[in-house]
Amino acid sequence: MMQLPRVALLLAIICTLMIIGSPKTPQPQASAQVAISGIPIQTDDNLDPITLVFTGYAPSWWVASNIADWSDSAYCSGPKTVNGNAYNYTLEHPDPTGIACFGRRDHIRIWDMGYSPVYGQWSIGAAHHEHTVCDPLCHHVIDSWERAEADVRSAFAGGQAILSISNITLGNAAYYQGVFNDGNATRIQLRSSSAQYPVVFNENGLSNRTSWSVTMNGTTLTSEHPDITFSEPNGTYSFTIATPRGYSASASSGTINVDGAETHQTILFTVPWSTSSVTVYPSSGNPMAIGFAGNATVAIPSVHLTTMTGNTILGFNVTEIGTRGVLNVTIPRAIVPSGSSIRVYVDGTQSGNPKEGGDASHFYVYTFILYGTHSVQLKFQPSSIPILEYVTGGVLAASILGLLVIVFNRKKQRRVA
Image (tube, rainbow, N blue to C red; front, top):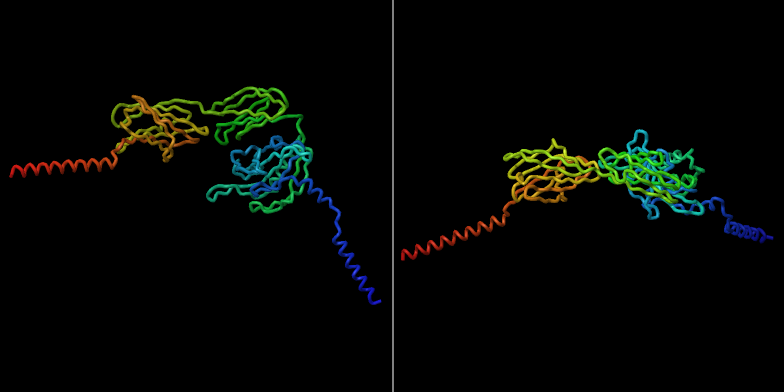
Protein backbone atom coordinates (compact mmCIF):
# COMPACT_ATOMS: atom_id res chain seq x y z
CA MET A 1 0.00 0.00 0.00
CA MET A 2 2.95 2.28 0.69
CA GLN A 3 4.20 1.73 -2.92
CA LEU A 4 1.14 3.23 -4.65
CA PRO A 5 1.90 6.91 -4.06
CA ARG A 6 5.45 6.40 -5.39
CA VAL A 7 4.16 4.67 -8.55
CA ALA A 8 1.60 7.41 -9.13
CA LEU A 9 4.24 10.09 -8.76
CA LEU A 10 6.55 8.33 -11.23
CA LEU A 11 3.75 7.99 -13.78
CA ALA A 12 2.89 11.69 -13.41
CA ILE A 13 6.51 12.67 -14.08
CA ILE A 14 6.70 10.46 -17.19
CA CYS A 15 3.44 11.89 -18.59
CA THR A 16 4.65 15.44 -18.02
CA LEU A 17 7.89 14.77 -19.89
CA MET A 18 5.97 13.22 -22.79
CA ILE A 19 3.72 16.27 -23.05
CA ILE A 20 6.65 18.69 -22.97
CA GLY A 21 8.61 16.75 -25.57
CA SER A 22 5.73 16.18 -28.00
CA PRO A 23 5.72 18.19 -31.30
CA LYS A 24 3.56 21.30 -31.38
CA THR A 25 1.12 22.32 -34.08
CA PRO A 26 2.59 25.09 -36.34
CA GLN A 27 1.14 28.53 -35.64
CA PRO A 28 -0.25 30.82 -38.38
CA GLN A 29 2.54 33.34 -37.68
CA ALA A 30 5.18 30.77 -38.71
CA SER A 31 3.54 30.25 -42.12
CA ALA A 32 3.40 34.00 -42.58
CA GLN A 33 7.17 34.17 -42.00
CA VAL A 34 7.69 31.61 -44.78
CA ALA A 35 5.77 33.84 -47.20
CA ILE A 36 8.10 36.78 -46.64
CA SER A 37 11.34 34.86 -46.21
CA GLY A 38 12.55 35.88 -49.67
CA ILE A 39 12.57 39.61 -48.89
CA PRO A 40 16.01 41.08 -48.07
CA ILE A 41 15.92 42.79 -44.68
CA GLN A 42 18.79 45.29 -45.11
CA THR A 43 21.31 46.71 -47.56
CA ASP A 44 24.59 44.89 -48.15
CA ASP A 45 26.54 47.34 -45.97
CA ASN A 46 24.16 46.63 -43.03
CA LEU A 47 23.49 50.37 -42.66
CA ASP A 48 19.92 50.65 -44.00
CA PRO A 49 16.89 48.43 -43.23
CA ILE A 50 14.41 47.52 -45.94
CA THR A 51 11.21 49.34 -44.98
CA LEU A 52 9.09 49.15 -48.16
CA VAL A 53 7.92 46.26 -50.35
CA PHE A 54 6.18 46.97 -53.67
CA THR A 55 4.23 44.04 -55.17
CA GLY A 56 1.70 43.27 -57.91
CA TYR A 57 2.95 45.14 -60.95
CA ALA A 58 5.74 47.16 -59.36
CA PRO A 59 8.96 47.44 -61.39
CA SER A 60 11.11 50.26 -60.02
CA TRP A 61 10.33 52.67 -62.88
CA TRP A 62 6.58 52.29 -62.28
CA VAL A 63 7.02 52.76 -58.53
CA ALA A 64 9.12 55.90 -59.07
CA SER A 65 6.64 57.40 -61.52
CA ASN A 66 3.79 56.99 -58.99
CA ILE A 67 5.43 58.70 -56.01
CA ALA A 68 3.81 62.11 -56.30
CA ASP A 69 5.99 65.21 -55.85
CA TRP A 70 9.22 63.24 -55.32
CA SER A 71 12.17 63.98 -57.62
CA ASP A 72 15.23 62.08 -58.79
CA SER A 73 18.27 62.60 -56.56
CA ALA A 74 20.95 60.79 -58.57
CA TYR A 75 23.29 63.81 -58.30
CA CYS A 76 23.35 63.65 -54.51
CA SER A 77 22.86 59.97 -53.58
CA GLY A 78 25.68 57.65 -52.67
CA PRO A 79 26.00 54.05 -53.93
CA LYS A 80 24.11 51.35 -52.07
CA THR A 81 23.54 47.67 -53.03
CA VAL A 82 21.18 44.83 -52.13
CA ASN A 83 22.28 41.29 -53.03
CA GLY A 84 25.15 42.92 -54.93
CA ASN A 85 22.83 44.98 -57.16
CA ALA A 86 22.87 48.79 -57.21
CA TYR A 87 19.62 50.67 -56.72
CA ASN A 88 17.56 51.38 -59.86
CA TYR A 89 16.03 54.67 -58.70
CA THR A 90 16.79 57.15 -55.94
CA LEU A 91 14.27 59.86 -55.06
CA GLU A 92 13.97 62.68 -52.56
CA HIS A 93 11.22 64.79 -51.05
CA PRO A 94 12.55 67.91 -49.25
CA ASP A 95 10.63 69.35 -46.34
CA PRO A 96 8.87 72.64 -47.23
CA THR A 97 11.85 74.61 -45.91
CA GLY A 98 14.46 72.07 -47.00
CA ILE A 99 17.09 72.41 -49.69
CA ALA A 100 17.37 69.74 -52.39
CA CYS A 101 20.27 67.31 -51.79
CA PHE A 102 20.79 68.68 -48.27
CA GLY A 103 17.51 68.53 -46.41
CA ARG A 104 15.77 68.26 -44.25
CA ARG A 105 14.34 65.66 -46.61
CA ASP A 106 12.94 62.17 -47.17
CA HIS A 107 15.16 59.90 -49.25
CA ILE A 108 14.32 56.53 -50.80
CA ARG A 109 16.34 54.04 -52.86
CA ILE A 110 14.44 51.41 -54.91
CA TRP A 111 15.77 48.04 -56.12
CA ASP A 112 14.14 45.84 -58.79
CA MET A 113 13.62 42.26 -57.59
CA GLY A 114 12.37 40.78 -60.87
CA TYR A 115 9.36 38.46 -61.15
CA SER A 116 8.05 36.29 -58.31
CA PRO A 117 4.96 33.99 -58.39
CA VAL A 118 4.17 35.33 -54.89
CA TYR A 119 4.86 39.06 -55.33
CA GLY A 120 4.52 39.56 -59.08
CA GLN A 121 6.86 42.09 -60.74
CA TRP A 122 8.16 43.44 -57.45
CA SER A 123 10.71 45.81 -55.95
CA ILE A 124 11.84 46.91 -52.49
CA GLY A 125 12.86 50.22 -50.94
CA ALA A 126 14.94 51.64 -48.10
CA ALA A 127 13.67 55.05 -46.99
CA HIS A 128 14.85 57.43 -44.30
CA HIS A 129 14.41 61.01 -43.16
CA GLU A 130 17.64 63.00 -42.79
CA HIS A 131 19.22 66.39 -42.25
CA THR A 132 22.66 67.80 -42.97
CA VAL A 133 25.40 68.49 -40.43
CA CYS A 134 28.64 70.36 -41.23
CA ASP A 135 31.44 69.68 -38.73
CA PRO A 136 33.26 71.01 -40.75
CA LEU A 137 32.60 68.73 -43.77
CA CYS A 138 28.90 68.50 -44.65
CA HIS A 139 27.23 65.08 -44.51
CA HIS A 140 23.77 63.58 -44.14
CA VAL A 141 22.59 62.43 -40.70
CA ILE A 142 19.62 60.05 -40.50
CA ASP A 143 17.05 60.88 -37.82
CA SER A 144 14.10 58.57 -38.60
CA TRP A 145 13.21 55.45 -40.60
CA GLU A 146 9.50 55.35 -39.76
CA ARG A 147 8.83 58.97 -40.74
CA ALA A 148 10.09 58.46 -44.30
CA GLU A 149 8.18 55.17 -44.55
CA ALA A 150 4.98 56.97 -43.54
CA ASP A 151 5.64 59.78 -46.04
CA VAL A 152 6.06 57.26 -48.88
CA ARG A 153 2.84 55.54 -47.86
CA SER A 154 1.08 58.92 -47.84
CA ALA A 155 2.46 59.77 -51.30
CA PHE A 156 0.87 56.60 -52.73
CA ALA A 157 -2.46 56.82 -50.88
CA GLY A 158 -5.27 57.66 -53.27
CA GLY A 159 -3.17 57.08 -56.38
CA GLN A 160 -4.77 55.41 -59.40
CA ALA A 161 -2.17 52.61 -59.44
CA ILE A 162 -2.80 51.52 -55.84
CA LEU A 163 -4.54 48.21 -55.08
CA SER A 164 -3.77 48.01 -51.36
CA ILE A 165 -1.45 49.25 -48.60
CA SER A 166 -0.69 46.99 -45.62
CA ASN A 167 1.96 46.22 -43.01
CA ILE A 168 4.29 43.23 -42.81
CA THR A 169 6.91 42.28 -40.24
CA LEU A 170 10.37 41.67 -41.67
CA GLY A 171 12.02 40.95 -38.32
CA ASN A 172 14.76 43.53 -38.91
CA ALA A 173 14.18 45.59 -35.78
CA ALA A 174 17.54 47.07 -34.74
CA TYR A 175 19.57 50.25 -34.55
CA TYR A 176 20.83 51.34 -37.97
CA GLN A 177 23.21 54.29 -38.09
CA GLY A 178 22.28 54.97 -34.48
CA VAL A 179 18.53 55.21 -35.18
CA PHE A 180 16.05 52.46 -34.21
CA ASN A 181 13.94 50.73 -36.88
CA ASP A 182 10.84 48.95 -35.54
CA GLY A 183 11.10 45.93 -37.91
CA ASN A 184 7.75 46.62 -39.59
CA ALA A 185 7.60 47.39 -43.31
CA THR A 186 4.90 48.82 -45.55
CA ARG A 187 3.64 46.66 -48.42
CA ILE A 188 2.23 48.63 -51.34
CA GLN A 189 0.47 46.61 -54.05
CA LEU A 190 0.28 48.29 -57.47
CA ARG A 191 -1.66 47.57 -60.62
CA SER A 192 -0.35 47.97 -64.17
CA SER A 193 -1.49 50.94 -66.23
CA SER A 194 -3.06 49.47 -69.38
CA ALA A 195 0.22 48.07 -70.71
CA GLN A 196 2.13 51.34 -70.54
CA TYR A 197 5.92 51.41 -70.75
CA PRO A 198 8.54 53.87 -69.52
CA VAL A 199 10.06 56.38 -71.94
CA VAL A 200 13.18 57.72 -70.22
CA PHE A 201 15.03 60.84 -71.39
CA ASN A 202 18.57 61.00 -69.97
CA GLU A 203 20.52 64.27 -70.14
CA ASN A 204 24.28 64.57 -70.28
CA GLY A 205 26.24 67.81 -70.05
CA LEU A 206 24.11 70.07 -67.82
CA SER A 207 25.52 71.38 -64.57
CA ASN A 208 23.89 70.30 -61.30
CA ARG A 209 20.42 71.74 -60.55
CA THR A 210 19.97 73.12 -64.11
CA SER A 211 16.30 72.88 -65.13
CA TRP A 212 15.38 71.26 -68.46
CA SER A 213 12.11 70.11 -70.05
CA VAL A 214 10.75 67.53 -72.47
CA THR A 215 7.41 67.75 -74.26
CA MET A 216 6.01 64.46 -75.61
CA ASN A 217 2.52 63.51 -76.70
CA GLY A 218 1.16 66.87 -75.52
CA THR A 219 2.64 66.59 -72.01
CA THR A 220 5.57 68.67 -70.70
CA LEU A 221 7.72 67.44 -67.82
CA THR A 222 10.45 69.55 -66.18
CA SER A 223 13.29 68.44 -63.94
CA GLU A 224 16.56 69.61 -62.41
CA HIS A 225 17.85 66.05 -62.42
CA PRO A 226 19.41 63.81 -65.08
CA ASP A 227 16.34 61.88 -66.21
CA ILE A 228 12.72 62.58 -67.15
CA THR A 229 10.35 59.61 -67.42
CA PHE A 230 7.05 59.35 -69.31
CA SER A 231 4.70 56.34 -69.27
CA GLU A 232 3.09 55.54 -72.64
CA PRO A 233 1.38 52.61 -74.44
CA ASN A 234 2.77 51.21 -77.66
CA GLY A 235 3.01 53.76 -80.43
CA THR A 236 5.18 56.40 -82.08
CA TYR A 237 5.52 59.78 -80.34
CA SER A 238 7.20 63.06 -81.23
CA PHE A 239 9.21 64.99 -78.65
CA THR A 240 10.89 68.38 -78.30
CA ILE A 241 13.51 69.57 -75.81
CA ALA A 242 13.37 72.97 -74.10
CA THR A 243 17.05 73.92 -74.12
CA PRO A 244 18.37 75.89 -71.11
CA ARG A 245 19.88 79.26 -71.86
CA GLY A 246 23.48 79.07 -73.02
CA TYR A 247 23.28 75.43 -74.19
CA SER A 248 22.65 73.52 -77.41
CA ALA A 249 20.77 70.20 -77.36
CA SER A 250 21.30 67.11 -79.49
CA ALA A 251 18.77 65.82 -80.29
CA SER A 252 16.56 68.86 -79.83
CA SER A 253 13.53 67.03 -81.28
CA GLY A 254 12.59 63.71 -82.86
CA THR A 255 10.35 60.67 -82.55
CA ILE A 256 10.35 57.66 -80.23
CA ASN A 257 8.81 54.26 -80.92
CA VAL A 258 7.38 52.38 -77.91
CA ASP A 259 7.12 48.66 -78.64
CA GLY A 260 6.39 46.61 -75.53
CA ALA A 261 9.48 47.59 -73.55
CA GLU A 262 11.27 50.44 -71.80
CA THR A 263 12.72 53.03 -74.20
CA HIS A 264 15.65 55.41 -73.60
CA GLN A 265 16.67 58.62 -75.38
CA THR A 266 19.90 60.43 -74.50
CA ILE A 267 19.97 64.22 -74.83
CA LEU A 268 23.47 65.72 -75.06
CA PHE A 269 23.77 69.33 -73.92
CA THR A 270 26.80 71.35 -74.97
CA VAL A 271 27.89 74.96 -74.68
CA PRO A 272 28.25 76.48 -78.18
CA TRP A 273 31.76 77.37 -79.36
CA SER A 274 32.49 81.09 -79.39
CA THR A 275 35.39 83.39 -80.27
CA SER A 276 36.49 86.76 -78.91
CA SER A 277 39.56 88.98 -78.83
CA VAL A 278 41.02 91.80 -76.77
CA THR A 279 43.79 94.34 -77.33
CA VAL A 280 46.58 94.41 -74.77
CA TYR A 281 49.31 96.97 -74.33
CA PRO A 282 52.82 95.64 -73.61
CA SER A 283 55.23 97.74 -71.56
CA SER A 284 57.20 98.26 -74.77
CA GLY A 285 56.16 97.92 -78.40
CA ASN A 286 52.85 98.19 -80.20
CA PRO A 287 49.41 97.05 -78.93
CA MET A 288 48.67 93.37 -79.64
CA ALA A 289 45.46 91.32 -80.08
CA ILE A 290 44.89 88.26 -77.87
CA GLY A 291 42.37 85.74 -79.24
CA PHE A 292 40.12 83.36 -77.25
CA ALA A 293 38.15 80.46 -78.73
CA GLY A 294 36.20 77.65 -77.05
CA ASN A 295 33.05 76.80 -75.14
CA ALA A 296 34.19 78.65 -72.02
CA THR A 297 33.57 82.41 -71.82
CA VAL A 298 36.37 84.87 -71.02
CA ALA A 299 35.47 88.10 -69.22
CA ILE A 300 37.17 90.58 -71.55
CA PRO A 301 37.50 93.40 -68.95
CA SER A 302 39.48 91.03 -66.73
CA VAL A 303 42.27 90.40 -69.28
CA HIS A 304 45.60 91.94 -68.28
CA LEU A 305 49.23 91.55 -69.36
CA THR A 306 52.15 92.13 -67.00
CA THR A 307 55.93 91.69 -67.20
CA MET A 308 57.84 91.03 -64.00
CA THR A 309 61.54 90.06 -63.63
CA GLY A 310 61.61 88.80 -67.18
CA ASN A 311 58.38 86.78 -66.87
CA THR A 312 55.37 87.63 -69.03
CA ILE A 313 52.00 86.89 -67.36
CA LEU A 314 48.64 86.91 -69.14
CA GLY A 315 45.75 86.81 -66.65
CA PHE A 316 41.95 86.66 -67.08
CA ASN A 317 38.72 85.27 -65.63
CA VAL A 318 36.82 82.51 -67.43
CA THR A 319 33.40 80.90 -66.86
CA GLU A 320 32.28 77.42 -67.90
CA ILE A 321 28.56 76.54 -67.47
CA GLY A 322 28.79 72.92 -68.64
CA THR A 323 30.53 70.03 -66.93
CA ARG A 324 33.81 70.74 -68.74
CA GLY A 325 34.92 73.18 -71.41
CA VAL A 326 37.96 73.91 -73.51
CA LEU A 327 39.76 77.16 -74.19
CA ASN A 328 42.30 78.00 -76.91
CA VAL A 329 44.32 81.20 -76.39
CA THR A 330 46.18 82.83 -79.32
CA ILE A 331 49.13 85.06 -78.32
CA PRO A 332 51.40 87.02 -80.69
CA ARG A 333 55.00 85.85 -80.47
CA ALA A 334 56.12 89.49 -80.23
CA ILE A 335 55.01 89.67 -76.59
CA VAL A 336 56.38 86.27 -75.57
CA PRO A 337 60.11 86.13 -74.70
CA SER A 338 62.03 83.92 -77.12
CA GLY A 339 62.48 80.36 -75.89
CA SER A 340 59.94 80.76 -73.09
CA SER A 341 58.28 77.81 -71.37
CA ILE A 342 54.56 78.00 -70.55
CA ARG A 343 52.86 77.24 -67.23
CA VAL A 344 49.10 77.50 -66.73
CA TYR A 345 47.63 78.27 -63.29
CA VAL A 346 43.90 77.92 -62.53
CA ASP A 347 42.80 79.54 -59.26
CA GLY A 348 46.45 79.64 -58.20
CA THR A 349 47.10 75.93 -58.82
CA GLN A 350 49.26 74.77 -61.71
CA SER A 351 47.29 72.87 -64.33
CA GLY A 352 48.80 69.70 -65.73
CA ASN A 353 46.74 69.52 -68.93
CA PRO A 354 47.76 72.43 -71.22
CA LYS A 355 48.85 71.80 -74.79
CA GLU A 356 51.10 74.15 -76.73
CA GLY A 357 51.53 74.98 -80.38
CA GLY A 358 52.36 77.81 -82.67
CA ASP A 359 53.50 79.15 -86.01
CA ALA A 360 55.82 81.92 -87.17
CA SER A 361 53.54 84.66 -85.84
CA HIS A 362 51.55 83.24 -82.95
CA PHE A 363 51.78 81.05 -79.88
CA TYR A 364 48.78 78.81 -78.98
CA VAL A 365 47.80 77.43 -75.56
CA TYR A 366 44.95 74.88 -75.28
CA THR A 367 43.58 73.93 -71.83
CA PHE A 368 40.51 72.39 -70.14
CA ILE A 369 38.20 74.48 -67.96
CA LEU A 370 35.92 72.86 -65.35
CA TYR A 371 32.45 74.09 -64.36
CA GLY A 372 32.38 77.48 -62.62
CA THR A 373 34.23 80.80 -62.76
CA HIS A 374 38.00 80.65 -62.44
CA SER A 375 41.03 82.92 -62.40
CA VAL A 376 43.56 81.82 -65.04
CA GLN A 377 47.19 82.87 -65.46
CA LEU A 378 49.50 81.97 -68.35
CA LYS A 379 53.10 82.45 -67.24
CA PHE A 380 55.84 82.60 -69.89
CA GLN A 381 59.27 82.05 -68.38
CA PRO A 382 62.45 82.56 -70.47
CA SER A 383 64.82 79.63 -70.50
CA SER A 384 67.60 79.90 -67.89
CA ILE A 385 71.17 78.54 -67.93
CA PRO A 386 71.37 75.56 -65.58
CA ILE A 387 73.73 75.78 -62.59
CA LEU A 388 75.81 72.91 -63.99
CA GLU A 389 76.51 74.97 -67.09
CA TYR A 390 77.60 77.90 -64.91
CA VAL A 391 79.96 75.64 -62.94
CA THR A 392 81.32 73.95 -66.05
CA GLY A 393 81.87 77.30 -67.74
CA GLY A 394 83.65 78.66 -64.68
CA VAL A 395 85.95 75.66 -64.38
CA LEU A 396 86.76 75.85 -68.08
CA ALA A 397 87.52 79.56 -67.87
CA ALA A 398 89.74 79.04 -64.81
CA SER A 399 91.59 76.21 -66.53
CA ILE A 400 92.29 78.32 -69.61
CA LEU A 401 93.46 81.21 -67.45
CA GLY A 402 95.75 78.90 -65.45
CA LEU A 403 97.21 77.44 -68.62
CA LEU A 404 97.94 80.90 -69.99
CA VAL A 405 99.74 81.85 -66.74
CA ILE A 406 101.91 78.71 -66.90
CA VAL A 407 102.85 79.32 -70.55
CA PHE A 408 103.62 82.99 -69.81
CA ASN A 409 105.90 82.09 -66.85
CA ARG A 410 107.84 79.50 -68.88
CA LYS A 411 108.48 82.00 -71.66
CA LYS A 412 109.68 84.56 -69.09
CA GLN A 413 112.08 82.04 -67.53
CA ARG A 414 113.61 81.19 -70.92
CA ARG A 415 114.23 84.87 -71.65
CA VAL A 416 115.99 85.35 -68.31
CA ALA A 417 118.21 82.31 -68.93
